[in-house]
Image (cartoon, rainbow, N blue to C red; front, side, top):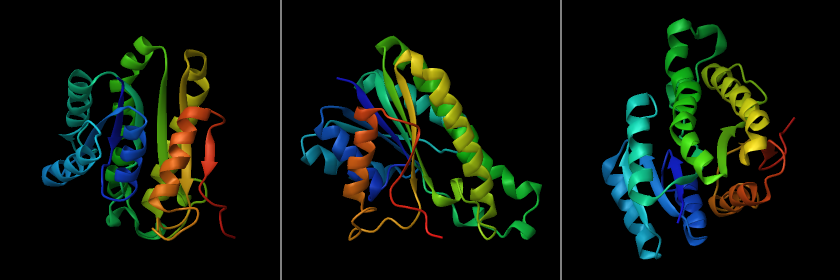
Length: 221
């Protein structure tokens, strides 16, 4: 059995995607800061017959991410799929004329150093398996910067560039890096952006392995 590792585990999209990969036969490693939430999510998945376990980590702390991912592989099995989809903090979204250099430290750590740390942690195991998938989930500002959300716009663009480069250089190793852009809010009643629909999209990106960038719905004008 191989492992689906979810960085940014939560009760919405994260839980739905963990359930989708878990029902497909993968064990599930849940990474987030809140230990109580991790235990609740793991227990809920366990009631569905999915082997799941929480591993506390902070995306702003590279050492904790590396430790959690290595422990997950040791406990649950090699990580075949990594999903990086933590939710940005509200203070990342300052207007562009209000930000200084210090305001970019946390967004860039969140959206660049975090993904780089995670990929470096899981890539050796994927190479041993001879396959792997790296799923990057971003909002619309990753491709259409918004002046009122400057921190995430800058940081998501950098994350997108990193993920696109991975897509190119890892393809020959049967490791598929791909990005899903979710332009609007994730809503349970949405035909395109509900947790259940998005989880199916993400699972399809893993199995179909076509192209780099995909959209949950068209960008609005």
